[in-house]
Image 1: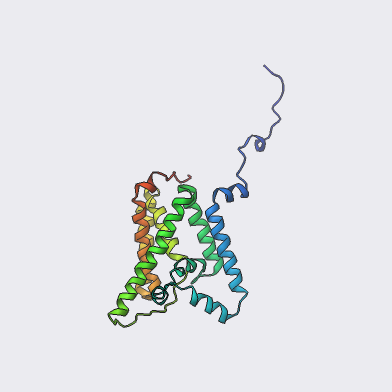
Image 2: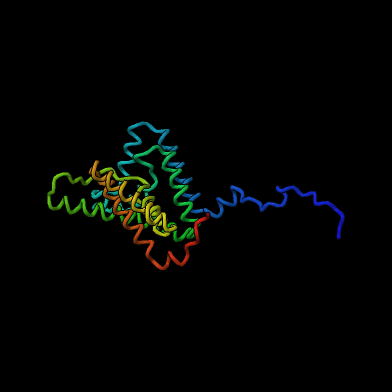
Length: 219
């Protein structure tokens, strides 16, 4: 038996914590998207009110842009944080999309986010187009429609649906109730889109492709 004393400190024996660089490398999708949102928000903050309004107008994924073939607005609209302070929206993306990427990997996390963003946009603008063609009052062909919220809601709903039983039992209904209350009070297109995105997120959680890859949440 050795008489030498173990001089290692608890810090020496503890498992090394992942560095910020390693975390960013693992969450490369989230890191890239957060950087794009930050750059866009910083540029918009440096512009005057007229330029910001013009940028939002030209990147809104509305009926008018769909009719004239500007389908790329469905993607560029997701680069603008709207409705909340930019830092709050970017932080929400970092947390929700980051957790999704950690659990499912970048391809599946991107697919769920895009499914929610594009699916909710197409369904809500499709409903708006029907309202316009049938001359229902209140329909707008050039509505302001930008933001990250559809993809964010769908990803969050999918995480809750695939999470532990308490999250599925309480978290998902609480999110649905919050979004339904907002739609009841505001009656805005985006509020309806949030409910659609929630449904798309739950639908995505039912796919075997996603369930097979999901890893347990950390305790």
